[in-house]
Length: 222
Image (tube, rainbow, N blue to C red; front, side, top):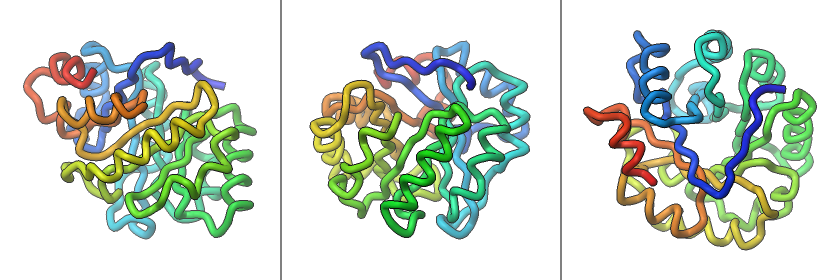
């Protein structure tokens, strides 16, 4: 429905606007695009699934008008099925929801099918305490798996090395073309750990937006 998403055997950097200047989001997104970013990671939090509230559908709709970058939208919310259609129609290219937000396997599959029905790429995320084996049965139905290496809800947390060891387990069981994304504590050192283990997309917020040189920071991740 929206932009074509290709990995082409490279690492995709998805700067998280959670760490950007919210008063100047269009400018911030333009700056990371000029610095080499192809995706923008949008953290949607509801104050229930995670203990924080961030942005919603109106912001995604506004960002869609302001950029042609891939809108990589991470739903850290309860009842994700209620929000798939609004976010898809707002312009999200990828909708990633949480395995832990679903009541059972049938619920997970229903949300995946719902996302795809709008022509949007479907992603599934797991929190640090969730074992990767729990999502193996869904891998063939997904476009992306997001491995959290911090507890979701706030930016600037320290990278959890044990969580990175989920990456090769997922990669070994994944079909060709599955994007394995990592989010949490990503910097120029932890990024290399993740990509060496099989990740091909990295979310970075404070490392990029807190740097004085966005291009140097992005290049440092790959």
